Length: 186
Image (cartoon, rainbow, N blue to C red):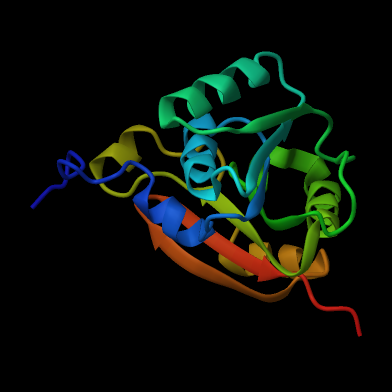
């Protein structure tokens, strides 16, 4: 049967939230403001004892993040800064999320990954949400202009940024989820 609509009552970010794995009290960083609804949903989980922060330098990013947080009834901080020079101490966050995939970062992907890896704590996770297009009829109508990077290429790039245990977590509804862990100092 053709699945045209989401099941009634199914949270819109159910898969993404499971892949990010935020818990109450966690400090989570979003590198990019193009998914303010997802950041708001994570902020609702991290709560008052944790912190969800979005960093971006795009025009209107702060307003989008504020709207996403308000819709979720959450507190989400916003920092206007380049993703290649994050204004945080090393090891500040439990997890970092790159919500738009590596393709959206262009030639700055390596620098953004290095900064995201720097600001997560040892043992912390980096989660890459990589939209690759919807399967089926809708994918044919709105296919990506360029093919997405291969899963092996993404895992190699994340490993090259110093992350360990890099793997593809899931490939669901045209979105791939990757994770890597920051190693403990030896």
